[in-house]
Structure formats: C-alpha cells, structure tokens
Image 1 (cartoon, rainbow, N blue to C red):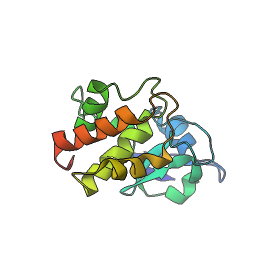
Image 2: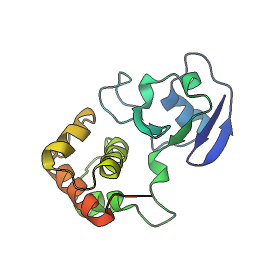
Image 3: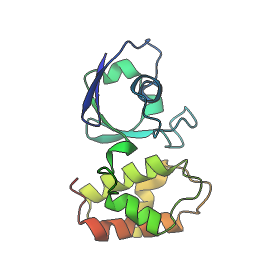
Image 4: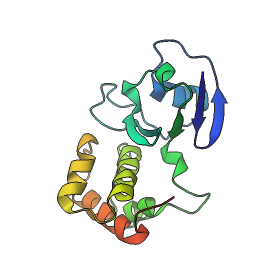
Length: 155
C-alpha cells in the first residue's frame, strides 16, 4: 500500500487487519501518534486523513491506501513550533502528554474552520479527546490563545 505521510510517500505491505495507527508507528516510524484505547474513544491516535481529523485506531490501514496523512509531527516547522503547540506549551495545557497529539490536531482543525471559537465550541471540538490530567480548563484557554495567535492557522 501507499500513504503520503507529512508530505513524504511511503510504500509498504500491510496485513488486512493492520490498523492505520500501527502502520504509522511501525511501518512509517512516527511515534507521535499514540496507541490508546483501540476503540476510538480516547483520541490519542488522532491524525489528519485526507484533510479531516480521524481516529487512526478505527481505520484499517488498507482503507487509507493512496491517502494523505498528517500526524502531530507535521505541525512544527523544524525547530519552530506551530502556534497551537506554542499556546499549549505556554499555557501548561498538558501534563503527561498522552492526549496531546489528538488535542493539537483537533484544535488546529477547529481553528482552521472557525478562527474565533467560543469556549463551548472548543469543548465540543475536543469532546472526543480524553485527558485525565488537566481538567480541560487549560486546554480551552490554550485553544482560545492559539486562535488569537494564528488567525485561522493556515499552515
């Protein structure tokens, strides 16, 4: 199968049962996408597949054949953090970091479609990403700050 991941083409064999999360981690070698619940509930495995955030533990790799995937590793530009990453860092919006990939990609998608989200819209957007550390207040504040900083986050 073929996948474009973060702008680079990858070709590899995948068993019919291989989940996209495992293909990204084991075949492509990018470990920022976390393996969590494997049921689509926690959001730790969130990636952007063909332009939409997707829980990669609920997608068979072969169904993504020919697709375009962006992982959390795609956010930073070298050493320069994306405004969403900066806002989470500056606002202490994570602790253990397990939920962070899903939160960051979900926040970016929200801000791209809604450059000035309300707190209620932010909470609705991150609803599918579970965090057991922060209590969500710092996450909402960080997403609001990221929206302010990047004005729609075009990159």
